[in-house]
Amino acid sequence: MRVSSRGEYGLRALFHLAENYDKGPVASGEIAKRQHIPPDYLNQLLIVLRRSGLVHSSRGRHGGHQLARPPRQIKLSDAVRVLDGTTAPVECLENKNACDDHCNYCYVWREVKQATDDILKNKTLADVTRRR
Image (cartoon, rainbow, N blue to C red; front, side):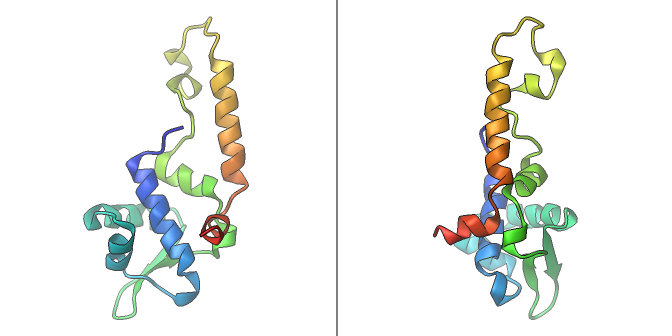
């Protein structure tokens, strides 16, 4: 599985929010600067994350962004699904018409996808930030 730039930047933003969860809202400018994410792109990602229910945003002097739930309650699988949609490494796992009926390789890619999904379902934002 290759994570898109959207997925990578979105996960970096979520990891930053997880690391600062107990400190309250974080300004998007701080996230962009510390995580080396283009500010305009980050703002687009934060809208997606907010609409998905992973992030809360507030305006004003003490506003910013924070996780909607504690980091230990947000699985990486939820974040990846919101940001990238799928973990399928090849198109035929998502679109049956993209693969020959006699394809001998789909089972390998299915196992790769299943292993990736299992890892992402068993890891949370807290697990990742704890390792730092």
